[in-house]
Amino acid sequence: MRQKFFGRVHLGALLAWAPAAHAADQALVAAAKKEGEVVWYTTQILDPLVLRMQDAFRKKYGIEIKPVRSNSTELAIRVSNEAKAGRVQADVYDGTTTAEALKRERLALRWLPDNAKELPKDYVDPDGYWIGTNYYLITAAFNTDLVKPGTEPKHWDDLLHPRFKGQIVWGNTVSISAGPGFIGIVLKDLGEQKGMDYLRKLAQQKIAGVGASARVVIDQTIAGEYGVALQIFPEHAAGSGAKGAPVRWIPMQPAMSAIVSTTGVVANSPHPNAAKLLLDYLVSEEGQAIYRDADYAPAHPKMLSKDPGFRSEEHTSELQSHSFIS
Image 1 (cartoon, helix red, strand yellow):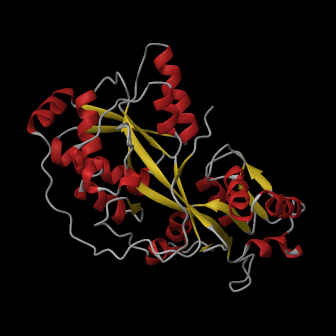
Image 2: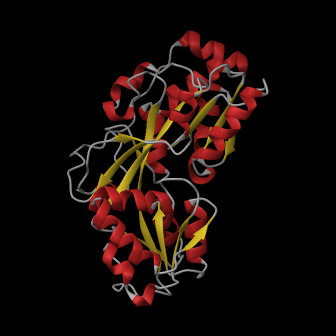
């Protein structure tokens, strides 16, 4: 997983370009078409992103994407178990922790498309096993029916207010987009002593834990089960809010985090050429435009996220690698 922490730093003044036509290696295209399909183990939301990618890839190459969706930890375990059983099913994987776990177990293929050179170096594995397709900000959100807009917690200290006791929820999975991720950010930003002092106070707020994805945490907050959700993806809240749901995301201070979703080819996959072609397409300008249009924050420097809030001037430390899979 690639991670950076946001507070106030310039992410880059970039111009939005229209996607250029991208021509993959014709020998690779021909070999991929013979295979006819590619199995994508993905953490991305099926609708709006994966289904759009599936349709565009089919129209361009006549190859069917077969997605299998889960979280990063579960996907890594699934690939590992299938490999041990001698039944590798996945061709392409993604996730915030999947890549490093598979790399350690030698279940990731060392291969990157030529267009990897178009991405910033922080989005490309120096060893050549994975490439970043998009990044996620991770922050907080609130139910606008339960928490009056303007009174939402905007600072970590605000979370300690008595009115939020029993009203806060986060995921309790071992992930950056869950409770452990928030704890890690606090300790990094405040230091061990001050961080632990703060976390002890926060524990008194009786935060609820949900053993599911950040999307589920948002959905339960929208449903009115909780007032405030921590460690969620703002595009989920923004998308639901645009459809009339009572939810808004919060640019929480003093720090939000951002993690890069990394993608690669599974070693000994059943459709290796189609896998390489899909990876090539995902990071092409054409593929990155699909991420952008689905309200994601693309990795390609020519593709700005549609929501200015996802690319605002923030404070960030250096990128770091982490993995929750031991």
